[in-house]
Length: 253
Image 1 (spheres, rainbow, N blue to C red):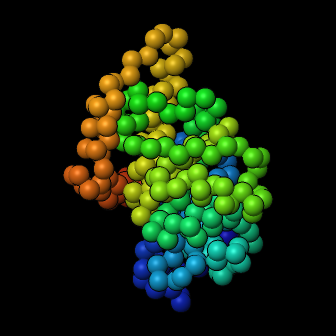
Image 2: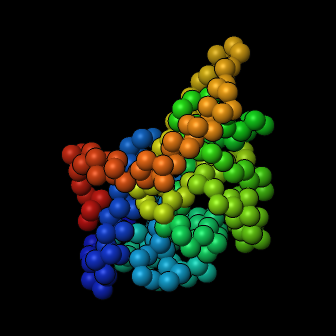
Image 3: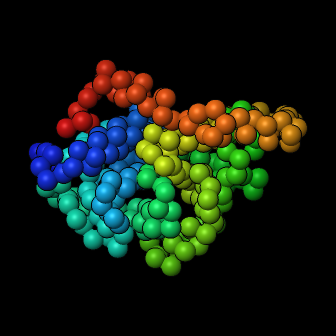
C-alpha cells in the first residue's frame, strides 16, 4: 500500500507537476474515463532530463496523490517509487517512454480505454467531423493494433504514426492525447472522448449522417488552434482544480 511521502528532495517545479498530474488522474476518474487500475497518464519531470512520472500499477485513479506517483527514466528504471510497494505497468512504460523520448516538447501523455473510444477505434472511418468538438482535431493519427503493447519494437512504429499530432486513435484499443502541459493534454482527451461519444450516438441512430462542408471543417479547426485565439486547456484548468478541491483535495498530498 502507498505510504506517506512529502516534498523532501523535490524542487517546487516537480511538486507542482505532481499535484497537476494527480489532479489529472482524479479528473479522468471524475469524468468516467478510467478503467479500474489500468491505463496511464505520464508527465515529464521539470528540469530532470529523461525522467517522467506515472501511476503506481495497482492504484485506482481516484486514489492517486502527488506523493504516490512513481518517477522512472526513459529506459524504465525506477528513480523514485514514492515509498510504496507498487510497480509500473509495462505497457504504460512502453507507450509513454516512446512518446516522451520522441517528442521532447510533450510534457504529458494520456491513454484511455473508454467504451466510446474503443468503439470509434474499431470503425474503419475513424473519427468523423460530425460535431464541433471533433473539428478541434485537424489531424487524428491512427496506429494499427499489434496486441498488448509490451514489445519495445512497437515504439518506433507508434511514434512514427503519432508524428506531430496531438491525438491518436489506437486501432481496436483506445485513445491517446499529448500536450505541452498536463492541462492541455487533459482538455484534448476530454474533447476527443466527447467527440467519440457523439459520433457513436449519432451512428447508432441508423439514419444518414450530415457532415459539414470541408472548408467549414477547416475553418473551425483553424479557430481552435492555440495560436489563433488562446491555448485551450490553460483557462479551464484552475476551474477543474476547484471542482476537485470542492469534492476531495487529497490528490494534493
